[in-house]
Each structure stands twice: as structure tokens, then as C-alpha cells.
Amino acid sequence: MNHSTSRKICLGITGAAFIALGIFCICRPGATVLSIATLAGILTLVSGIATLFYWAGVRAFFPQSGATFLSGVLQVLLGILLLNNKFLVAEALPIIFAFWMLMEGINLAVRALDYRRVGFPVWWLQLCFGIGAALLGLASLREPLSVGGSTLSATIGIGLILIGVTYLVGLAGVSRFQRRLAADPWIDEQ
Image 1 (cartoon, helix red, strand yellow):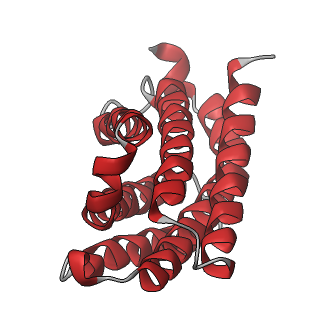
Image 2 (cartoon, one colour; image 1 turned 30 degrees about the vertical axis):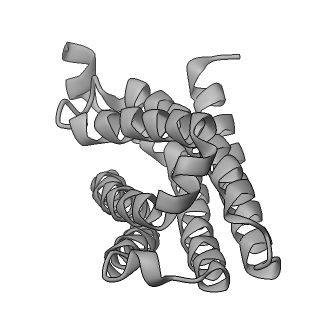
């Protein structure tokens, strides 16, 4: 399996997993914050790995893609933190989630602009979802510790669905992105 195919599989799995977890969080608000921390840790780790795969594929063509690399590294570190410190994280989850949503939303919005440059027709959809996720993270920072279990579950669910849909929209743009890069004669000269 080549690098491009594995990157597409990672993006697809990550997007679907985020959507599934988001729906679960909304439908089962009684789930404990501890189990949400564990599931969020697993998905954050997978998302970070997928982001690093994406970065590895585009770094030669977009030297300014350092924000994507940083996002991937921070997601991996956050995933490890969530998985290894469940009880401590359960108390801090609202704050951690708010910062993560803000960071990931900004990253996805910036990535949408790369898709626009290569002519992906629905780049604006990824931009809107990225901005929506960033705004949700920003709104969650206002009073993160006063958010109750049901509200936190719904907020996390909506945020995860936004991120998951954005990953799937990005997956649809990867093929177009690759064709555009392959057709660019400037790339062959490098």
C-alpha cells in the first residue's frame, strides 16, 4: 500500500470515528466523563497520527505547513495525556476539550485554504466547519468548569461531528490535491 492510500485510509477512519463518537456522546449523555476521556484520548491519538501522515505528504509542496505538523504532534501528545491520566483529565476535560477544539478548528480552516488553491470545489465547506469548531472551542472556554455532564457530552458530540465531517470533506479533496500537484511542472523542477 502506498503512502497516498494509507493517508486516505487514515483520514477516512479518523473522520468516521469522530462522527461515531460524536453521535454516541449526544445520544448517551449519561456516559461518564472518565469514559469520554478514554475515547477522546484514543481518537485524539488517531487524529494526530492522521494529521502527521497528511503533513508528511504535503510538506515538500507546502513548506509553510508547519502548523499542520504542530497540530499533529499536539494531538498525539494530548491523546497520550488523556489515556495515561484518566482521573486527572476527567476534571480538566472541559478546558482541554475547549483548547483542542479551538486549535483543531483553526488548523482545519487553514487547510481548507490549501484545498482552495488547488481548485477543490467545496473547500468552503471545510472552512465553515473549521471555523465552527474553532468558535465552539472559544465558546467553551468562557466557563469550562461550570459545564455539566449532559452539556459537556452534547458539546463534545457536536464538536467531534464537525471535526469528523471536515476530515471526510478533506478526504474528498486529497485526490484532487494530488492530481493538481502531479500536474504542476514547477514541482518536477524541484
